[in-house]
Length: 331
Image 1 (tube, helix red, strand yellow):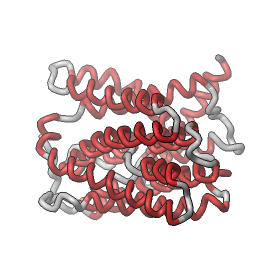
Image 2 (cartoon, rainbow, N blue to C red):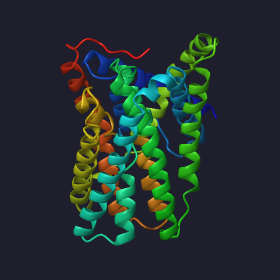
Image 3 (tube, rainbow, N blue to C red):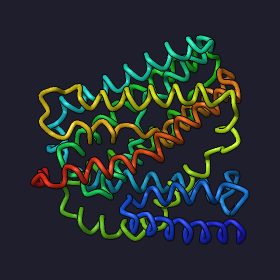
């Protein structure tokens, strides 16, 4: 127990330092926290043990607190104003990556069930990572941020349905995926329900201190889950590059799907790109069911790694380009 606490404190110090460094370089702090996770999960500075129950639970609690905070600051009326655009982005952002992932996987000689799993892993956006990046950039309360928030929730739900069907076909279970995503979405819903209450500000103040500790641990856990050896396996690189391309293009294109939306469509599309912990859940379910080989699992890891780490950098540039426009905060 003492060893786990020491690891936790050490990981928090490194994550905080990397987060501050990222902000100094003009990037969202989440990028530094993810990089810290990769370092802490490697042999260079092995403070993060993925088998440590305490670290795992703190990381899981971190995403719950993060989504609760986001829900607490989200006005349901404002979210409903962009409901049509969010629904369109979600649907296109599921259909295009899934269809493209399946078709191109088959072209690479991958079996049908494995191709379906790869396609499914491309469907869901990491609501935790996308919302944190937008929050760091001051874009979460804009119309674009609300579209991303609504679309991320919807495509997670649609992705889970697809995964449940495919897991049944593959002979595996999707209980862990349902449980993990249900907890995340439940935390968001709880915050959403408390938003209109008079106690919202006092609750937000109380949660903020806790969030400074546990939320960075969630991103460290995501970074530590990246298996660098699997990413660099030759047989994984080609499929990984193809899946990454499909994943990026499909989500960015989805941002342009609601033609009537007058906001920054590039910002919406790029913010939908990261897969993060949601992609990891899908890949792990595919591996556990026997549908994925270690090489294909490495390919999905490469896609998750690329979409998670590149998005903060690109999104920061997109946000800066649109910063000359007058702010359009939803109240």
